[in-house]
Length: 192
Image (cartoon, rainbow, N blue to C red; front, side, top):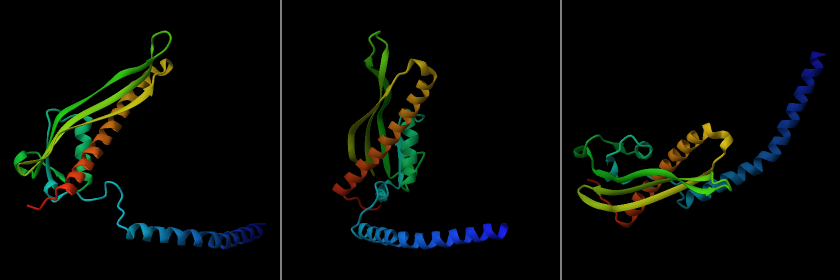
């Protein structure tokens, strides 16, 4: 009995290998060619480019160092190869957070005048100084997300709002880095 089972398994595996070889090779060829073409044209994934050399050591100047935005900015800068330093004297760049606020507002109400939908928002205003000269002056970014309120799931609403705030802070951090990249391409920086 066991020998029949073994032989059946071996036959199934050999058929699977033959079938897979016929199906995989054309797909593998197309994938390889696509990768070569995209890589050859200079395409880079968003957020994969290195930051300017002058931002290699950045100080984040804020009055609120314990917010979701501060954590997201610090992580995003570190993820792109920058070192977030603890003092202004060590830094080649100073990212000044002038406003860091978030909140929520009611978007819609039911016939009984109870909230049905909320909007969570996050607002930042920042500026960037490189070696004493201003590169970005008082740029404001606002991001929003909405979510529905379900009276039957009241306990989960606070957690959902917190998750949305963290997601908004991560979006803001990515947008700040994109603006820095754009300014870098408009005004090339030299290493110090």
